[in-house]
Length: 492
Image (cartoon, rainbow, N blue to C red; front, side, top):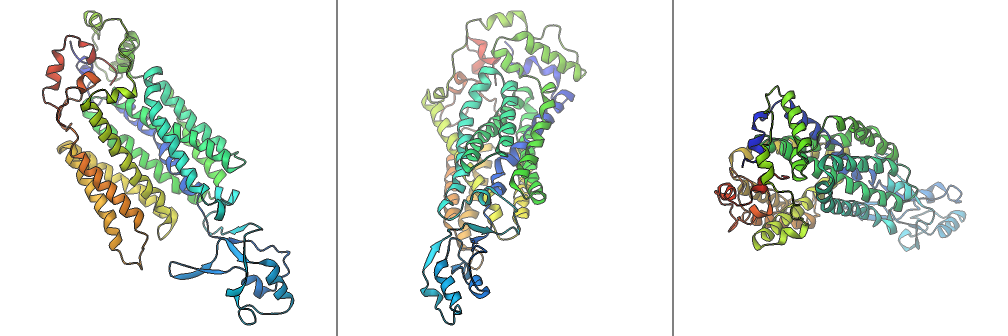
């Protein structure tokens, strides 16, 4: 029995149909780029100091010295969370005493910012931090916002694949795009931090689900030679394009609510894609919906100006697929055998630890020395040559050594940051941690089975043939000798 790629080989690899799918699915990823990083500007913390009310009866000298100084990065700056006790300095002001001359400021009693804060508007007109005063005693809420967003990403990662297996790739793709765009729009009307954060969690669920399902749909529709290009120059590069758009939007729109409104527009523009992106024929076949799958392939052949067989799937082959439903595949199935469990655990570690380094560096880019918008743009821009390099390397070299090599390089650079003199930067602990984890996962990657030039397994039954951290070259040959050939035409 022939497999799916053999059956549809007459379509060609890079016709108008494949190019349309390639660019439309890649374009659908653009909103993911700025939604995933939008917290950089939405939750930015401007410089701030305690507010001294205009009603306070203070001389100009005491008003200028109402905020104590603290040492930061080798220089004295106004304290962000404390002020001198207002009643005391108002009394000194009424007596005509001068700060620093008649009164020792270091001996004065201090108090918290009882009248709120004054936020600098040099960079941001407003953020959720300035809106709800997420500073000082409440400064823990800002990093928690990002953490909860990625908690939504984690949950979406688990459910998106299961939902797309149950309801179809196309339906879940557009449903999660609607979730991402719709709940981002609702965030504009948030009345408090709690409402904003809950909605942000749901945005995170939609954001990763959209990405994962688009990735799956593209790899299932496109041919073997195009999948590497799609997964690097397609999906990843268009994610970087969205990431580059974020600082451009944020530079011109410095109010967080208006910025969110602008960021929802590209998601709305994706609605017409519904009429151009088809369902995955592989998924339709796995659901026994052969007529729908054949109709899609017939339309693809017409678009590519290719002559399609009158019957694409031979009736005898379809009878061999047997009508009883296939075995249910759950997440726990990835731990069914020792070989599959080992590969699953190593892959999870690779993705998780790589993501820690990627997002920690990306989210910290605006905090580096220099212009926040330019730093963020350069952080996104540098990803484009990185993806091009990855595409070129994947064409020629074994994948394990590529991944391990770049992880060693990135981890080594992060570890070397501690050698930079303190007059540049001295907060090295996060980079030491990220560098160590990156090097660790680089070592683990060397034990993954190699996939370069090898037919990839498509089912758990085929995965069981992976032995000793190496995929046997005769995987496909041995698979074709199985008594039950139904594993060859299934969802990818």
